[in-house]
Length: 327
Figure 1 (cartoon, one colour):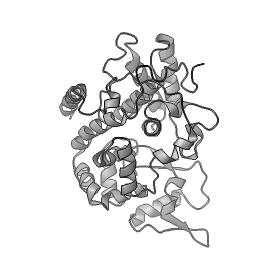
Figure 2: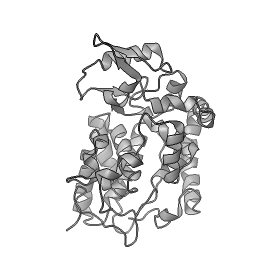
Figure 3: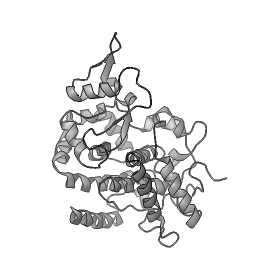
Figure 4: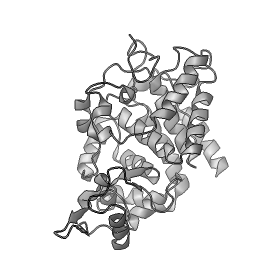
C-alpha cells in the first residue's frame, strides 16, 4: 500500500507538470510555489490540521467539506471564509460548515513567520488535503499559488452547490459546469466516507405521521439503517443533532462509503441514487472492491477540484486575515 501511494505521488506530480489533470485556468499554479518565500508553509498547515484533528476527530470531514463549498462557489479562492452581511457563510446551506478554527490557526502561524505571503485559498486546499491523509486516506501533492478572492455573496451559493435531493442529471450538470466529469462526481462523492450531517440534510427520506412518529418513505434505504436514523433524528430533534456520514468507519477515509451505498445505507438521497444510474453504478461497484483504485482516482479528482476557478497572478490578493479583505 505504501509503495503504491508513493508511486502515485510521483506519477501524479509528473502528469500535473504536463498539465494533464489541470484546467487551463490553473496553469499558473506550481509545486513548491512557496519554497523560497515561505519554505515551511505546507508543514505549518499540516501541523495545524494534525493538532485540531487530534483533539476533534470530526475536523477532517469539516475541512474537506469546507473546501468543496469554497471551490464550487467563486472557485478555490477562500471566499467561503469572508465574514459579513450577505457573504457566502450567511447562506443557510453554509451555516453548518466547520473547520474555520484550524484554518485560522494555520494562517496566524503563517503570518507570524511569513507575513503576507501564503494565501487563505492555498491554506483551505492544503488543509483539506492533509485532513484526508490524517484520516487514513492518500497523500496527494498539490500545486500552490492561488490568490484570495474579494467577492463573497450568499446569492451565489445555492446555484453552485449540490443539494442532497439532486438527481444524477442535476449533479452531473453542476459538476460539468466546474470542469468536472461524471467520474469525478462518483470519486469526489467518496468524501462522504468521513464527516457528519445534520438531520435536516436527509429528513426528506422520512415522513412525520399524525402521532408525531417518523416513518420511512424512501424504499431505497435499508430498513434497519432507517430505524437507526429515525432514532437519532426523531421528530422535533434539536438542530444540533448530527449523524455520521458513514455508519461503519465514521472517522476513517476509506472505501466504506461505496460499500454502504451498495448495502442501501447511503445517508443522503444523492448518495443512494448513484447505484440507480448506469453511468455511475459501475464506478461505485468498482471502488467498493478496490480501495487502492479509489485512492488513485481520488488523487486525480482532488487535483481537478482544487483547481476550479483559481485566481493567480494579478487577480485577487493575499489576505492578512482570512475572514476579511485587505483594506
